[in-house]
Length: 558
Figure 1 (cartoon, one colour):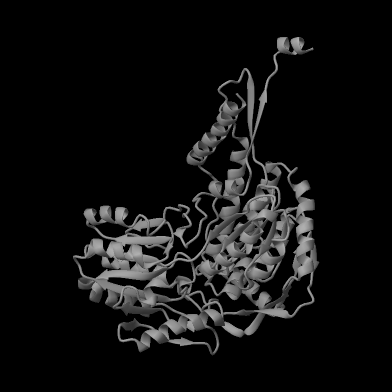
Figure 2 (cartoon, rainbow, N blue to C red; figure 1 turned 30 degrees about the horizontal axis):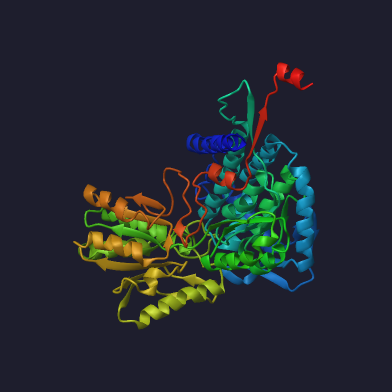
């Protein structure tokens, strides 16, 4: 009897979650992009913030339980990618004793945080979003421009994404907390659903390229009641610290999110010693996530919970072009996807499959459009793209270019130039590869290189198969065609080659504002596309079922 009831209870809550995730539509006020190019007032305010940050040379602390700590280790420097001789900010890595303090503080303050109602937590998130959209906006954009090398419009796109994410996650939590279970026996049973935090703390490890992602990795688990240790990328540290200050000003309880500049591997080696470690929310390199798996695996039996390891990792996104495609659409979408932010984002297009009969036309149109693009200082409002993030990235990217120049089977048809004298600049580069499994076609380069393979016009299905086999990643892909039969076949044959497949649109982002799935294979395991999916991942839902005792039964017992 108890087994049947338990099964029914489990089935009820599982059905509820599936139906709710399927039907939930989160509505909120979306942040609107700044038109810096045509709005003189906002343009001047941004320039002022840029000048302030350059002159200030911010010292970024470690923050644990609301206390700013300056470590005693070697000073680390954040330099501007486009002017790498200029220091933007300074910081020191957190030390081993700080990790223990952060873990103890997380578990202590968490007990207070879980008593704060979802509504009160959401109010903090909404206030933070308002601060970032208004009071902190130009400062945050300036930090992203200078620290991460994004243009003004790209930086503001990042800020808007964070504002929208905070509002969407807050709205989703309110809806989730108000949901009620279907009760099929209300006369005898009272069944309730509770949004419950996990019994421990989460480690959030962010990438260099997206402040919105880095902050979101920490914000989402904290919103549902978890304590979080947040480790932003060094290059993203200044913008992340500004976001952290906005959370503090909005009233976030001290210690719910600890801010720790440090090394990824060293952080995990220390934090895995706690039995209350419950998971990692990660975005970054596949190799780094594999290291995290290997660090956690030997300690599994030491933890109170099986850790949840959520990741969005590498990508080798593709554009497939059919001979029936609109060439202008192909060219514009491919340049946008391949070369915005120098291809340093997980949705960048890095491989193009084009029919031999169309390549001359595509190539010429691409050259003409790329010639119009300004690659330079990101503080210049006319800049299309700027320098790559640092010396390590610069050397990795130019090694691919240098290797391509030496091989007869590769032809650089555009770009190929680079310079590190002032900043880490690499020209948008297009390389035709005669071999479909050339490293340029298979490896994640994370830079402004577009690798092209030319297939025979009639080998469409064979090329679909080739695309699926070529890469260990499966994040985004796009198909350009006007032939309906080709489009139909692409959906079937490329079903495992991309988690987000775009037809006649570039792979960089959804123009319909849809959230993207985070890939399969080595592209990660963070499956949820909606904010709600991700919210549920970092909570431990609880069913509370109370059997009502009738008055006559109570009298008999007495």
